[in-house]
Length: 130
Image (cartoon, rainbow, N blue to C red):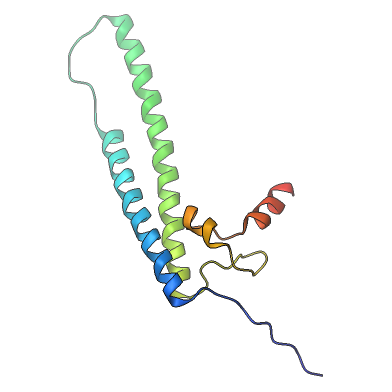
């Protein structure tokens, strides 16, 4: 009894290079954004000027909220960077663009918009229903 070999589809080397260019561009922007967030987050905006106590409390509360928001944005940006770097590894392994659920190719249009995607839209929707 012969076992049927499953043929795995993948993107061509030229297509992988196109996606690599998209990812590298997004990675560069993401790293710059993270750098700016970290600089802003670690920058002390207190210039030493004294304002009325009521305004000082409001300013400090606002500054704390802004720093917390920046910290959350920085964490999301770090995750995005890791996802993009993982996509580069998949390109090197020639497994980029293959849905990890269905094994089918993720459409190019989706990968151009979300280059770190690991699932097709259909697989993602199925996962969200569970």
